[in-house]
Length: 286
Image 1: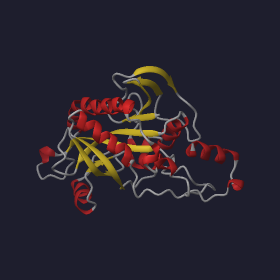
Image 2: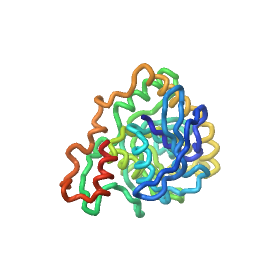
Image 3: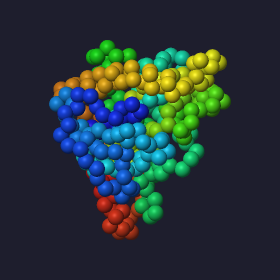
Image 4: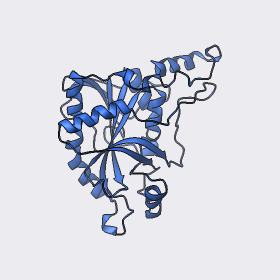
């Protein structure tokens, strides 16, 4: 089942026929908000607002582990994250969509970035952290709907909540060679891999961050919200076309390695694990 995580401005999904809303207990505390189970283009999916139903949570306040664990425990096997980003490249204009294939972790503050630890040991490969098979299906959907979609972009994740300095923006653009910058996809993307989920980010450019010399082009909250609102219809149209095509060509887990990410990653002996650790591992491996 597909889970959709909505970023800034996406607190519900238009066109979703709601079947159920629930909040569940997780080993990591509360998730961001109620999880909606519904039908979108006759496809059953889960929806969770990343920042809470009323945008109560700053990026560093999001309980990423609880979000991923809750969605996985409710049956999610693949995930699409919708995220507002600043563009670090001229060719990605504000209002345009990109698919992310790589993530650059520039988060310096404390965020819980792994399900593992305290005796439960695993090292998951994140050389290719996005699901290539799901990305190809989204590209096909974009082509069918005549939606422009940039591909194979690198997402730099920063702490927030402040917007970046120009020095930071230039570093991420030039030294790190990133294409877009945001505040939330790390550790979300890497936790999704630990949970053996097929994960893809649809990045919605709202501005050019602040690397340009012209101060009027630098990101402001007003610009972000105004441009993002206009782009939501485009991202939802892409999602709708993707789900429509899933009726004819469903996601094939054998076309990627995401669902086997833990196959050789766990080093702990099952005999040495507590009942709580065994239960956690069972959810992640399911």
